[in-house]
Amino acid sequence: MKANYLFFGIMLLLFLGVCLLDWRGKPFDINRQYVSLKVLGIIPALMFIVILFTSGTKFSGALGVLYHLIIIAIIPRLKAPTWAKMAGYGWITLDVACGIMTMANVAASIAMPVRLGGHVLCAIWIISVCLFTRSKLLKYLGFFIAAWLGVYSFFGGVLPMSYLAIPGLLVVVWLALLGFLYQEA
Image (tube, rainbow, N blue to C red; front, side):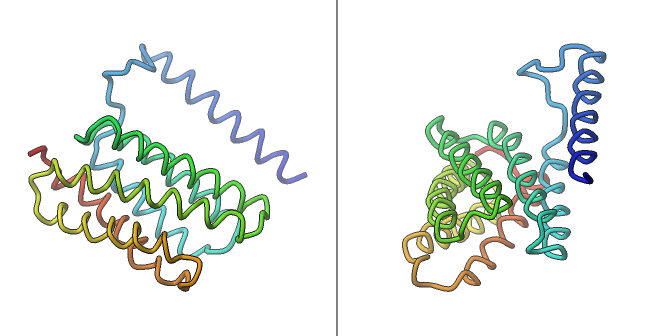
């Protein structure tokens, strides 16, 4: 019964949000930036902290999905070739699907290989973005994260999941730093 109320509450908030955007005019103008890159970089970092404290719950799974959905608004703002941006969107698609699968109690042996495939796409996107940024910190941190995620994806079946903690934390730091340091080369 609680889930029904939560579902209808979320639907009401989404409906009111779209109505508010529409009331303010041109809610889905492709050239309009609703939120700064700084805010978009910081929100996932804050969400990640909450996810760490609620790890293993349905709530943390839902936050993980929202975390990835926020990154959809970051991908088009960063300079990268179109194919690399598509890799970023593919990463988000696969990680959101895996998050929903996990919340639906799908076995990790099914969901995790899909997630690792998404991490290869994430590595492609991050490397591509790093090639077009002036900030050396963003560039080299991004290269490190991408290399770790990409290589781990090929060995994830035999390596412990704890090896993903380092790039998982660093990608949050990288996203937060994007808002403050990102400048196109």
